[in-house]
Image (cartoon, rainbow, N blue to C red; front, side, top):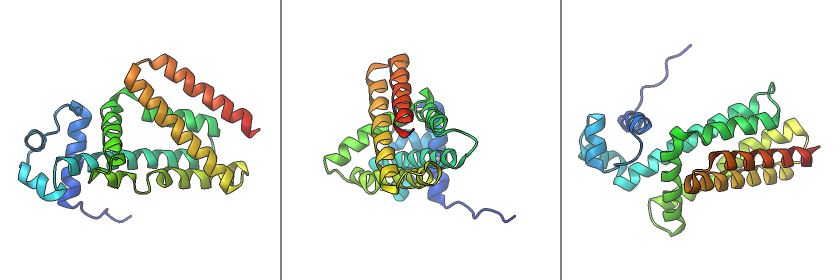
Length: 192
């Protein structure tokens, strides 16, 4: 077993910011407040992330990458049914502790859609990062064509994002969970 390579200073700072946001939420994302909370200077955060928006982008990308890694691990778990994999991913991405990060994601996504930088970088390959790994796993496991699997996964990404937005806007956890479960059952019926 080899040791993991040491983290860069940027990665160390990002990890500290993520830990901080996980415990405090994303209420105050000013560079000065975040820097003070993680034991560095706002200049250091500016140096590594460019701006407050650059830091927020890095946070959102890191959270998305962790969620995509979870999705890939679930897709590779042949001991779970695909429907149970979907439910497990939903439980993770809709967990109340992630709500501040989900809110940041949607705020940044909207700014990216308006063409604002650096938020527009969030859109580069965003859907493909979700679709491709899961579609390949579904193709291999369910026997669907790769194009069918891509379509199903894209639909799943759209439903999950829509329901996450619904959950943030309404706070109606039970209704949103029921809607997600209905989607899973419809998907299951369509794949049989």
